[in-house]
Image (cartoon, rainbow, N blue to C red):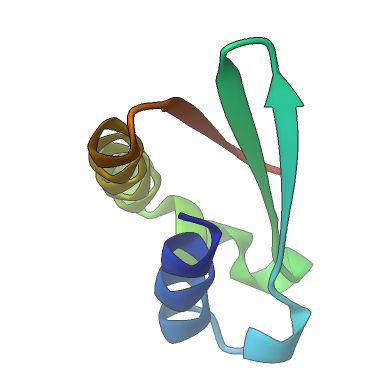
Length: 75
């Protein structure tokens, strides 16, 4: 799941080397924190949050396939 988030984020941003994804277990949830360069935050969030919401949806689908729950935070 971490690789999925990294792949999507790196293909959207202009500085792919600054993409960093950390994983933190929180009870029954896994929280993924996505960090990108300051100038790329708008690209990752998208207009009205549509890109971020699409990434969260894909992450939830991947988590269900693995039998767990996941959440994405953009830092």
